[in-house]
Amino acid sequence: MNTPRTTLYRDKLNGKLMGVCAGIADYTGVDALWVRLGFIVLTMTLGWPLLAYLVMGMLLSKKPANLYGAPEETRYWQGVRQSPKRTARQIRAQMKDIDRRLAEVEHFYVSGNPRLSQEIEQLR
Image 1 (cartoon, one colour):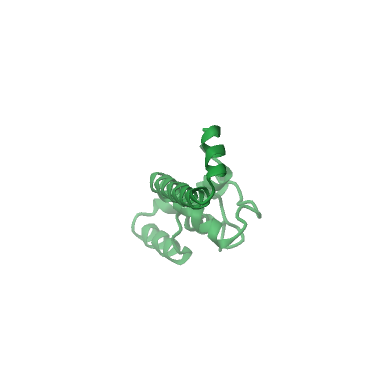
Image 2 (cartoon, one colour):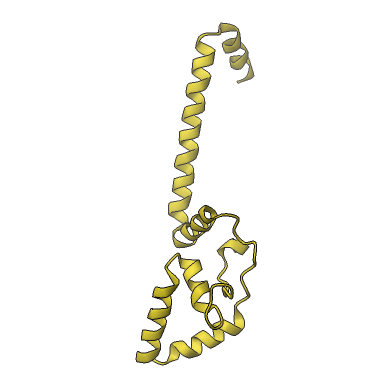
């Protein structure tokens, strides 16, 4: 399940150099400032993150311009990338709630109309 919305991209629009830190920030949902600061600290202490940054800058694709339609969609896909199981549970819970509410509406209309109740029972 590697859709365009669950892929790591370079974010040249919000990036400073190659857009790798901005891409990681977009992918994880963490503020880009913290990703950049973490990168600087790791580079100063270890050194190899600079090489990893350059490799990622060359290998990652640029983020498509119309990847997300709205800020809510951005947050949703960041949540999917962070915890797909939790997102699936949330969607399942929302669907159960919708099903429950539809059953209540059906019960409301059917209880006052015996003919409609009979037709619905025939469809089952």
